Image (cartoon, rainbow, N blue to C red; front, side, top):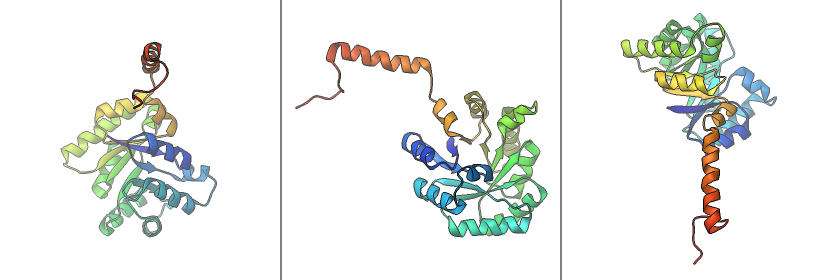
Length: 225
């Protein structure tokens, strides 16, 4: 499993990379605009925090294939590193994926709601496909089931594309796509923290500490010499 953080908040990214086994950061136009700063400065700051090897997924904002390609090439020149261009699965987006694939630029197909959208994006050259799990659930669908269908299709057609499951509102959704076999997930900072939370874990840790301190006093497991 690859864990990615879905945010452009620098403090949240620093915290995640300090504590958790992170593989990258995903952004979109809404996430970037929420920071209310120059977008290139934000992206450069993220790259500086996560390093050149970590994945950074940045979404194109154009809906015309040629413009998407132009944006992708610009971002590769300015931001660089292990970069993926997020492209929605619209006809112009699929066209852009085909062009960028030939140029050697890595692609993440986004705004996916069906397995057939994911399959076509993979055939067009997308390295990752990003199904919107919670949004599928919200329209009386089953996001985890769609993820499972995508994985079946990729296996059936021997495709190397991977699932980057996105759009989560709770830990159970993340757990469901993990069981389905999704290779990666991108979650917001709150959900990332909650993936480790459990009241009995906290209780157990406190019990261990209390038992230790009742015998040995407050301190750590080292001896002064």
